Length: 234
Image 1: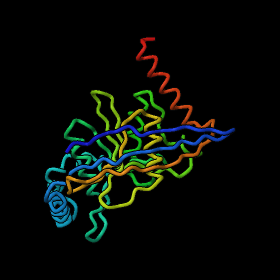
Image 2 (image 1 turned 30 degrees about the vertical axis):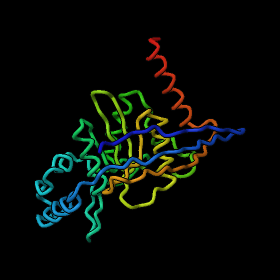
Image 3 (image 1 turned 90 degrees about the vertical axis):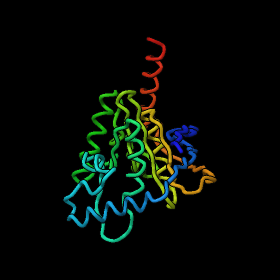
Image 4 (image 1 turned 45 degrees about the horizontal axis):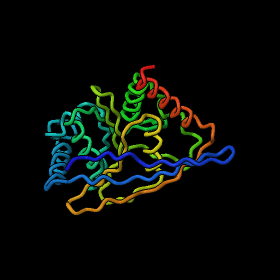
């Protein structure tokens, strides 16, 4: 099963100083192969046994973990913290994407999260795109950070996704993906890890409220105008 990146539906309405963006987004099912979860747990336990020093314990995840782009905090207990994000990021990595986790639109304190955020922002600037951080203060609901950010350097193609196993999708996550799509033109989706091939994809809705003069709307408009000029050869 391959990841499908279906563009979200965005509808804009405005009255006076306010603009509402109604978002509809469909989940993308992604097959979780037999034994994948157990494989990841075994890697983590071997890594823990080495007192988190032996990166080779991660086996097929090693390159991703060793790159420093995978924000992973080992929490005590058996909860599979970080598994879903790593599984999807590895799939994208194998298709030529550079992937990061732990990227935030707001300033963060953790060293690796901040490093990853700055790396993504630097690449966005190189592509002529205004980084989202600092542009979203006037939006409601509060936007959630994406689980995985992916970039194909050959095609200058951005992708952003939330990854879920059984968890509920929150409006702030849908809103966050929609705003990233507006600002970057990148593909966005909610990835649902599934075992059942007959899984039926769900649709999720969210409403984003912002000022009519919101920097997000201005930046998105500038990006679209620039794309039109490039396409038309102006």
